[in-house]
Image (cartoon, rainbow, N blue to C red; front, side):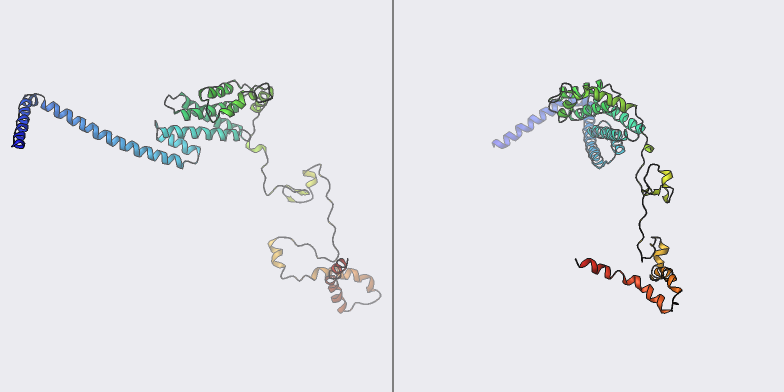
Length: 322
């Protein structure tokens, strides 16, 4: 009985609420439906946007992890603007420009200056943005300080201020010790490294240099050896390379054939030409004095040609006796 009575009371209460809401539904029903539909669309749209952003960010991180060059980092920055991945891609691109700029400054000054200018612009862009994460800003400050030092013409004021700013803003930075080595005197020194006159003079001198790729001879297989001309072997080396001492000729060993060349033609003929032919030429020369006293028989040249081949055998025997 009590449950049935309770059910009747709930039904009566629901009926009363519906009855009381009828005037409001007639007056504001359409507006309520419109507002509800708009809210539903907004919820669905936000959910779809969130899913899309998550997928896009995942793709951006994947692209950043696969980047292997400065151009790859810059492409990630351009394709995913306004994201954390874009800032990380830009700091990597700036640091890559800095490294190549310092390296090229010793061999190709125009290329090195171009890379350093790109690095400076990208570092400054990160520092000017209010949305840059602290860990990225820390690296941008240190990178810009190094860039200013590398591009200095002897005036290291900008680099010094950036190093000091890094120490002040990020006292626990991993770059703090490196920055202090540039702007604070080390143990036993009265002035900091960037305040020394020797450092300023070096950067002033280095800034005035303009190395080009062709200034230094690159090593190769056509480099001349002592006693050889740049184009190959020859006797004109003394004229092309003055100041070289005369190289003594190698003594010829008696009884040995003429040296063979390494050309393919001579290598092919090694098996066809018998080795005893070279000593045959020397045999008649030695036999000329004896030709007046005793005529040479056909068997004598054969014996004389075999003699050089037999000479090496007793020589090692005499060396082994001691």
